[in-house]
Length: 54
Image 1: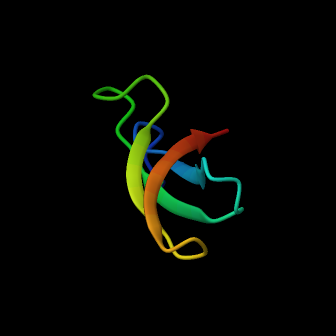
Image 2: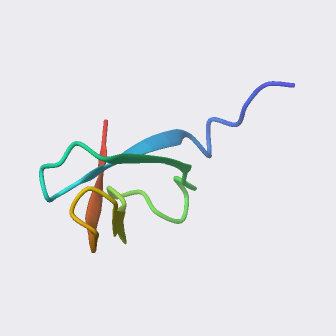
């Protein structure tokens, strides 16, 4: 079965500049803008904003 184009895989990169990334899926219909989530950056041991990159 084909993967849905409506829920693409996106890569979230840390805004702290450490190079840490998370991979997740998002619903384009509910979140058409770039995704910003506050997640744990294990290199600096803090929660920071992770922004979607394309």
